[in-house]
Length: 403
Image (cartoon, rainbow, N blue to C red):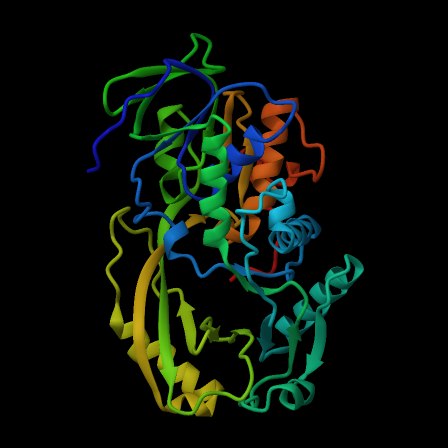
């Protein structure tokens, strides 16, 4: 456990629980909002972020969703990455992050999913995304290395879709937020005290013993979101689930970039510099312990490698270079984000349950939550579809493109 730090003040207008990608996005967007004049505290358990989803991410970005608001969230993210220095105020210290736009390639091996892809492409096209609905023959012409004997159609988009240098965003959000007066604290929120009527969180208690009064609490706790919510007497359907990533080398490299390919088996693969990256969920996908990052190499041997070799015959001769296990902050209700205030504890704001979409959705979510904190409403992109009320009502967010 890292040495706990003491807060500089005993009261803050905003206390953000969790300082990884989403917490730092909320902190930066709020601190740089010219209409916000309050104080912000970010409480992060581990200063190295080694147990966060952020450090285990594959930094992917896609336009290929079936719901309009998810598409618009990603479009803002792409614009933010491509114009990062301008968004950061033109600061010449800020680098230009890389957005590798070789796209996602969704492959369908049955008529039902083929129809879903076609429907999604039509929605994406109306919103200006460059997704193409392709026959197997058209895919083969562009990417002859695929074995497509079982594939009917696919969707592919070469515009603002692929992967990006998310760690640059994360590092600069933290640095810039601090420069604008945000207090980052290595500590842990262990309890919350609510008002007599239960409508507000009045203070948080830190592991080091200090009690900090607060105007608003923002839950950015990633896979630990349910623990943070429980301190306020709230239940949310978010749990840590393992996701596996493998880096491998090919004896016979492909002659062009490999799109981020979503195989019907659930295995995905893509180019990763001079190497290749693959990943998947386990077939048995339970909640895991918050500190369980043990890799399961049988998944590589029994699931991933056979799929790679079948889908791309050149990958019959490959060598595993590196691998790791990370955690999704998995929303068991509908695998989409829970964002916005609680219905009864009105100063408790969720930024939770992204189920693997958090990195690419972090710019829009940080901007949106900063608007809630400053104005009490969304002003750029309406994120109310992600609200907590749907959990209470049992109304799932409709999104068909879940990986």
